[in-house]
Length: 569
Image 1 (cartoon, rainbow, N blue to C red):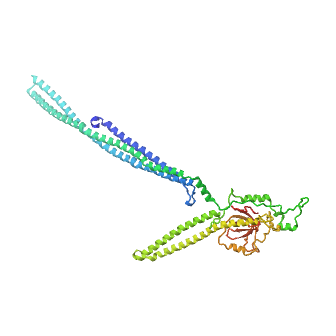
Image 2: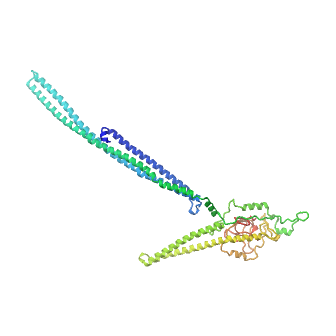
Image 3: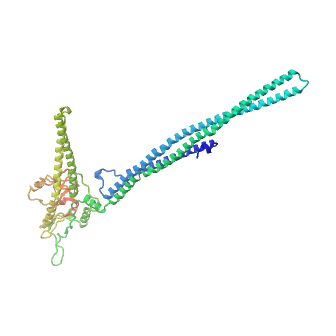
């Protein structure tokens, strides 16, 4: 159905309709713009959310639990999902909104051109009509004037009193007016014929052509709207497969959560390698009491024995000993911190072994890189030697030397860490043997034990825990062989830290056997070997100096150990 034939007289309405069509197109473009802004804001908020909950720690510090790894996988999938929302916004902005705005400008220009042509055609027709109307009015006036002159001539011609000259004059005037009327009639007829021809052209050619162009423009606008509706939906549908993969990735991450594996990681991360603590030894505080066979009264202790037993105030208070023992059990309390050392000796054996193995693996990778670089430099050097125009072989020698030096350093580091690793693997078994030996020392035939947890056959050798720092007891001779300490310290591999202690009294190692350690009152030391029953404990200062100190001079707090988990005072 053509606008030119059906709407030939609706120029104004068609002008309003085409303007409405362009306004509707721009309104839809505004809708698309607001829609893509929603997508952009949504994607931005999703990315900010992912960034907020992504781990900010280094890769080595990231937890290895499957629940955490799955959560991070979900965050990655969500980040990809946000990227797809950005693609949707970009597609809508480029293929829908941008296209609509460009097309709207084209429509405005085309509509303006067609309407101007229509107005020009209408103006030309109006001009033709005015010319025809003017000729018509002129013809009408001339006819009236000719009619008046005719009436005047006839009146004078019939008047006997009129002179001949007056009659002739009236007659001439009548002929003139009649001639002028005839000319006006001919002009009017010509103008009328011209107007009718132009009007036919106007309504049969010009206006139908203009209206057809307007109709084509409006139909193309409608088609463009349909295409952009489809593009609007396609922008969303195009990313659905990738979004589905993101959602499938989230489901796969959820299925990857393994409670047993996470429990195993907890064991692997925190296993110390120590054995659980054994039974607490019985501390007999009635060993200085003697009863008669008849009345069961307590007899006086000989003075010599009292002197050997130490000052009266040195006897331990059972409640005090129990409180110290409770302080030792840090299983659910705060674990004492030890300074970080290069050989990780501040860590429990199992954790130390893992850290050393990890360092060895890292150093091995660095060594392999250096070896690959050396090989590449040697190949380049060979090429330069065969083709001197490509470069100077001697220019590569400093870099090769530097690489070889780095390799030697890395090999030295690997050897050092492997030595520490073998020490850990050997120490775990050797420390178990020492604990077994110490258990044999604890079980004496008489079943006598000192307050420090050391067992002896002679009551005169028993040591009591001092409650006052004024009269510290003197320990017995720890080792008969003066060179035994030296043999133990000849080991280049340091023993791991198994606890810490605080000096209750100052101890001057001078005058004692070699291998003793000088300590000041209240000084904190690291325990590297327990008391084996001889009244001496092996300790290490923060400076790294090692030696033996009297067990009764220190307050000891052991970490996870299998035997002797007693706080000595």
